[in-house]
Image (cartoon, rainbow over all chains, first blue to last red; front, side):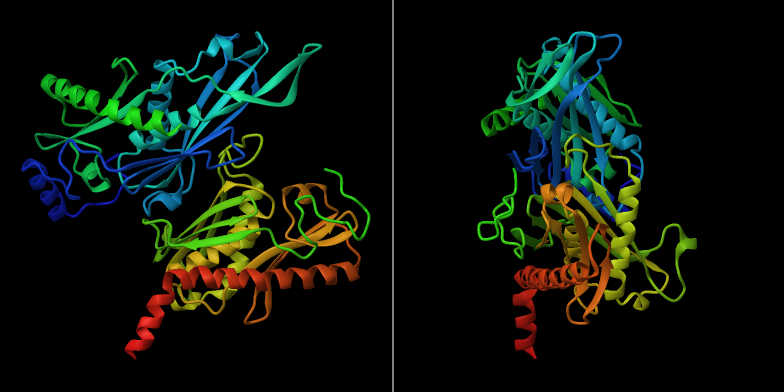
Length: 268
Length: 244
């Protein structure tokens, strides 16, 4: 994430690094403290599920659309989940219109892997005509304001939107899929939570701000499922982590994930 | 969803009168990272607009030595419509971006910012018919919020014909089942139409009625835009007057 968000002046860089080294953050938080999280579901009536998440000033809108389509060839009897991220230019002066770049593709894929590895839905129950027609679930991440830590905010919004989603009921008549007016809740089995830990100097911090991301040496995103098992990891950075760093980051993330999961399950 | 033909009991599918706008609300200053922004709900349309600039033009060769260049992007979220649409820009998006630019340009003192660009990004979060008009309404408020000097506000709404009747501000159903649709943008103080498109079939008399009705609708929207700006800046301007 480091190359795209402009240049943090050297002084600011020094200030952030010094503050973190003495256990403080630019916005007054402690090192292992998250910004305030608010979750609103059902914000887009035309989507089958939706959620808007504010993580401090970071704002992500997720819409879930559920339709019918063909299965993947290697899993002919399973439904399909596709996760896509849009970095729209209103979110930051440094976001430019155009096809998804590596940052938005990484974001979509990390969130996607979190959902998939945690087995949030039972794909084998999402077939309509086995081998031919299955449910297609699109999870579209829409970044409305960038203020750091897009992955955590997006993952919260994605699982919240899925939990709120209603799936259209289809009938099969003479081998054809026929829509009905009915909808039923999408069965969501798990609530994975992604927690990103940033390494600034020798310190590990939670929920980095945009400016902090600029001076982050290493970033580690850990997605945890309901049982506390780790279901996805993504490291980025170019200085390298020690084995001890990884252990500490997993500890920090594990503690925080439970709180965040409580907020998600409490809101929908 | 059938429309009754009886004159006295005729109501639109959503219960409105023929010359009634859908519920509309505009909020300005909703995006911390943009220089100016606005969020509009017009019927079930939900659109958020961010304005950046005046800022340096990229790529540089597109800059003009005597004026700023206005660039407008219209984009729909994949979940804004049924069924899901691809997030890649469509031909329709490109055209709407262009007509938005042409609708807004006459209102902006572009000549004050030579060599720079002013960018307007409209993101449709939910579409419900008349998205280009709603985008123009929000863009105008966002441009003012960005502190860009304007000759006038640009207000926009559509009129059209459905079930042989002339109506104002068509919703999604009316848009798709109507006989004609005319989006209009209008600068109320300068009395100039800056957007005029039409599809469908109308007689010259009906066209005149539609344009008249559309302008009336724009006048009402103009008040909503002013209110949105007053809500954010009203107190400040009062304060500065008092200081004087």
